[in-house]
Length: 258
Image (tube, rainbow, N blue to C red):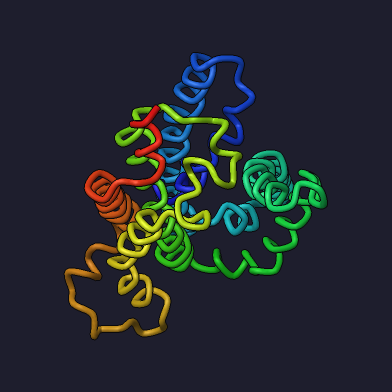
């Protein structure tokens, strides 16, 4: 579940930016995310367990389950899946990348064009291959990208909440030579923390992705992989915070001077 929500944890500002107040976004997320997702997880577990009784095997894929239902229920099941995919999954996952592509070249890429680019890339990676098996979907895809996004989340939390205490110079964000320019636009502390945060999860990912596994890696590294998001977030956040506090940054010097 953490891997599933790893993307939205980073691009939730793309949605909350339109909230009228801080209270609105806090209330909306508190009511709209934890409760319904916990209920969805319970329903998924119960439904999958029920398929062992009804069909003799655990069927976790909703599409495969719908095809096993009799007559009209198959049509209803597939229709529900189609509506859910279009109205929820596609809509939610298009917003963040569409804004990102538009930000790369605002003069040439609109939000709509960014959404079309995202849709094209989404089709090109053949997502149906990712959900061929529950093991592949969970251990390769969900854990794989959570191993990448966890360190990014750790760096962002450490920077915004712990280092800057939620205070940001908004004007400097848009100044190429401003406080956040660092070294030609890149923060070495963040890059190093990202690499070191991802590194512990690489052996586990390779072991899951390569057919037959890779037994050459130490067992303790393989054991870390199921907790890739937490491990990566903790390591990257700690390294980033330690680097920025001890070495300092151009932005911090500017803050002290002002």
